[in-house]
Amino acid sequence: MGAEYTEETYGGVAVLVGARRGAYPYANSLLVRGTDATLVVDPSLSLVGGAPPADLVLVSHAHEDHIAGLDGYDVPVHVHEEDLGPLRSRAVMVAGFGYPPEEADAADRMLRDDFHVTGRPDALGFTDGTVFDLGGRTVTAVHLPGHTRGHSGFLVEPDGFLFVADIDLTSFGPFYGDAGSDLPDFEASIRRCADIDARWYGTAHQKGVIEGASDFRRGLAEFAEVIERREAALLAFLAEPRTVPEIAEHRLVYRPHVAGPHVEPVERRTATHHLARLAARGLVRETEPGLFRTA
Image (cartoon, rainbow, N blue to C red; front, side, top):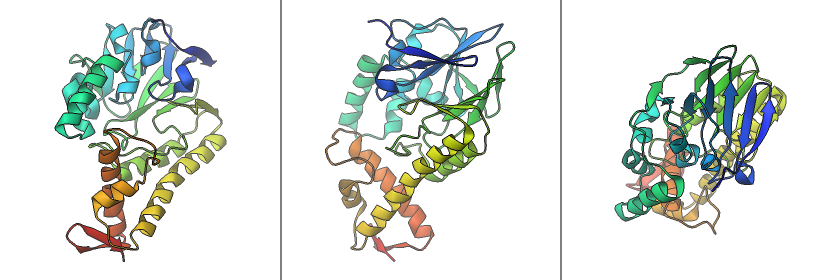
């Protein structure tokens, strides 16, 4: 199988647009060239069988759709230190999904067979603000946790290109349903992105590249509104006392037709994030152990 991407150029940054505009299971990757070195960001499934040469690889976070093309690179691989565990070990990645044992086995096979994930025990960690100097062009890590603990973007200068990875502005909205996800962190990361002035903002999935800070901030605000809509839907559902399994079955994240082992764990954790926040605000109370309703 050959590579399935198209290349779009923004200054010195080449966006390798994945199949189906980077919709999952694909993603958009970056190729950044300097006078001394070249790096790839997030080698996706679309790069399998035709990965462009590079001297190092940066990974925004340790999810399968962002690393499926890693086998094409026998070069140093870097990820934020908070995501080193799942990038180094497929077993740790699967554990982070929080699936029951029988579903975890199926997920492990899926990562191995569909996404070519073998684990990179040689992966190196970076921290917020780490600069990768390519010669005449730098790539600076911007820690944007919430989606995962180590989720990061990358600011390419002097081009003014900010890659925001899975703060992707899609109508699906923010995803904070993994075992290591955090809703307040995700909201703080959205605010941090809004504070960064760039010429171009690149996303990992369908939205692609947005030009101009005003358009990006407008899209970012719409993306964040999905969180508020989920919360409003939960408050309406809690007009009667409900358990977390009932909320998960009602669904805050996925549409009714979506099926798969990921749905229940994601819905349960998403509900738990929102219940904790609403309870802290005095909007929801636990009427008896495990039973919640609006206050």
